[in-house]
Length: 274
Image (cartoon, rainbow, N blue to C red; front, top):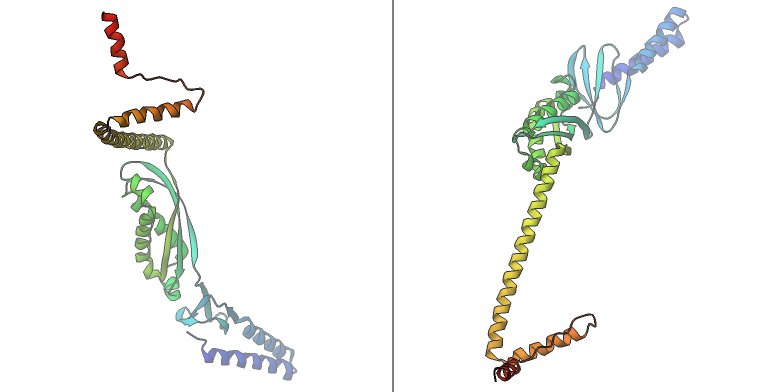
């Protein structure tokens, strides 16, 4: 995991030898060779950033990982592949999938991942980013095709987590850690949208009817209790009548209805019969 001291020693030896040949030799050929030797040594200097790891190969054979910092790699003989360890994102192109209840939908997603083992990402797969994207697309179609539209819309996070687990399981052998999957746009056919809107409207109307009927039941119960109380005290009915007349009289636009006791009407009826 760190720079091989022998490589640093080789670098300084080559640089010193090239400088000595250029400075001490009088032959033009040797001076030129010294310059080429120094350039060869300098061209092997590489910089690895803090968020990277270097995968070192010598004559095509894996040698190990190099940490961040200034390193030297022997040109031609050795090769260095830098791997970014930061969290990366992949935007999956929009996929057209048929859900389990035979509804065609178009959906796209974003995959978040990072390289956990750089040596596996280089040795076990040709292009770990492209391979992760293609596998995530396949898993997305498989998972969405196994759920119904209502579950897809209501349980988006749960569906995305299932996709993440499946993708992370296979990408472990590539040294990739899938940290998250987020479903973005879910497009459904226009006729399905209208049907869902009608269904939602019908559901709201059903709830409104239920709430109204429950209110009427509660009002009827209160009226029954009020009637029982008034039956026990008949004078309460007259008080209620006077209170109603007082409420009506406050608004000039209201029609005033004068209520007469039934005894007065009976008196008029008796006179007519005579």
